[in-house]
Image (cartoon, rainbow, N blue to C red; front, side, top):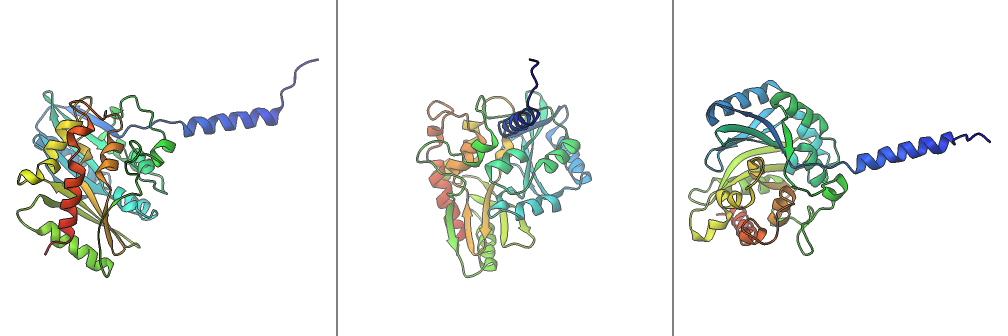
Length: 302
């Protein structure tokens, strides 16, 4: 008897297999856009121009460490995607880095699709990724080592037992209104002579979400472990430059002020780091507490 395949079963198998493959797609946290000659200043200017030509709005820029400029951009599309989620403000700013390395200048950016899953967004960040690729290029994705970071793993990610998830933020303060909370953050970041500086502010239309980008520089021994150079020297030691980890975000959500806990934020950007060793998390074990305290003091600044 001649074998006749069950067409319905075959179609279901194909569809199911395709779904499994889609769900099993792996993501890397960082993207190398280009590697070129020239100075950091020249490449930064060209990068800014390319981003603006592509329709991105420059929210802020700064230099967290020597030899690196960070550009944070947003767009109506990016803000609309972020506004669909309860804590979407964390993803409203797209971080781009320009870094001198090995005699060249490397342009990189955080992978918006990786962030989509890590920050549990409701919207699709693929169009944002496509716009960045068109504007800046894409040589390769990098980061995470041999870790298989799928959408499923990212959406429930934490580094290990006892460490924070995305929805375990540091609760920095609560105020009588959204406007009062925003004003408190503005005031705290404007305070001279401390470790924290304002890099950008993005308001999400139609929501009570405002996100601030915060730069961190140590000014005494007590704040040494929050310094951006201290942090990045430990974690960014192989492969592409991952300076687009900075700046840190503080989110005003309604009348509450919060920030992703460093034990989540650092870990999800560098999931392949070991716990021990010269580039392990134990080298920065004091940083989460120092950062949380500094942010709490900033919000309550008088």
